[in-house]
Amino acid sequence: MPVIDSVFLVGWVIFWIYWLVASVWAKAGQTSWARFVGFRIAIVLMLLLVVRAQVLKGHAVTTDSLLQGIGLAIFVLGLALAVWARIYLGRNWGMPMSTKDEPELVTSGPYRVVRHPIYSGIILAMTGTAIGVSLYWVVAVALLAAYFSYSALMEERYLTQQFPDAYPGYQRSTKMLIPFVL
Picture 1: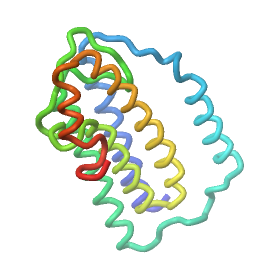
Picture 2 (picture 1 turned 90 degrees about the horizontal axis):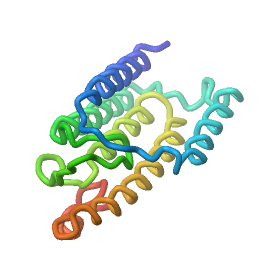
Picture 3 (picture 1 turned 30 degrees about the vertical axis):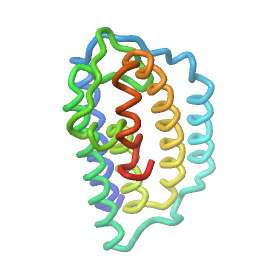
Picture 4 (picture 1 turned 90 degrees about the vertical axis):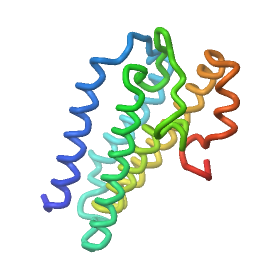
């Protein structure tokens, strides 16, 4: 395994370990995972099919050190944004599309720039991985972006119901995932 692949792998492992440990301190809530079982199963089956067929083996691997460096920088920035947003959200954090007991609307820190900075950060980190390791990661980026976009839309419906006076104004003043664009 090339060194750059190991750096990305270790970065992702550390990130997800932190994520799991930090989830212990989140407020109680509920996640309706059953609503999205079919979508999740389809994603897993597609990924297993790609891995099983060895479609990605040895193709489109990034060997340019400049691209690897750019990808690593984007990866680090993405993870930093996700972690900053997670820390800023504190106990209000929850799995995608979860409802929290005693929810609070957070609109400052990274949430002043985009409404879903955790999603933005993870998508950015995956994009960095695609640039730095293999362009085939673009498939994972696209699937993840679609899932997070859908999750964001569902969360926004919930937040509009929970905060009918504050959330619509926040939506008008802040982009969903990409500052000044989307």
